[in-house]
Image 1 (cartoon, rainbow, N blue to C red):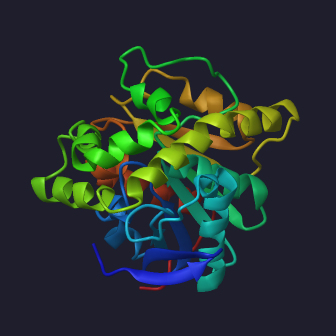
Image 2: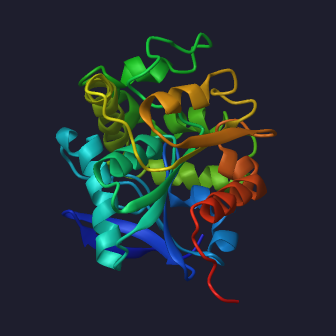
Length: 287
C-alpha cells in the first residue's frame, strides 16, 4: 500500500491514494477494509486509468466524525464526489464493494452525467427482493449494531476481538494484513463510526431505495456486476436484481472467490474492469 495523501473535502479530512494516468477510476471500499483492499489490482489498473482509492469517512486514515448522524449514504457519496472534484476529475468510472457498493450506486443514480460506468463487486441492490435473511446467522451484527448505547461500549471495550471475528472469516488474509486491519479498526473513534455507518444504512437506506424503485427511477449508467462464485451472492439472482433497478446491466460470477473478489481473484477483477472500459469505448493511454 502506498503513502496516503490527504484532502479536506465535504468538511472531512479524507485519506486517499492516486496513481496512474488515464481515464479516472474511483474505487470505494467497504467493511472491514480500507483503501488497502484494492492494492492487488491497482498496479495493473494504473496502466490504463488514473486510479483514486479513498478511505471511507471513519475508516482507515480518514477522519472520524463524532456524530452518529454523519455517516449516512448521501454524506458518503458526497465525500467521494467532492474528492473527485478536488482532483479535477469531471467524469469517471466508479467501483464499489461491500458498503462502497451502495455509495457507488447513489453516485451513479444522482450524477449520471458524470459517471460513465459503474462496477458492483459482490453486491445486490437494496429496494428489490428484500426480506431474505442469511440463514447461516453470519449477519447477527446487523441487529446488534442497532442497539443504541449497547453496541458502542461493547465494541469499544475490546475492538481487536470484535473486529477480529470478521477478519477471521477471511483465511486468504496474511498475518500481516490481519494485523494491519486490527490496528486500523482499533483506533479511537473507529468502532463508533462503523456502528453508526451500519445503523444508518439499516434504518434509512431501505426506505430511500424502495421509494426510488416505487417511483420507477432506474439507474441509466451502464452497470457491470461481478460476484463471488462461492460467496454470499452465489445463489442469488444478481443480474435479475440489478436489471430491476438499472437499464444496462451485464455481469457474471467469478469462480474461486467469495465476497472479496478483488482480493481472492485479482486478475479476473482486473480483466473484468478493463473489458468494461473497452465496452464503454474508453481509449487506453498511449504506451
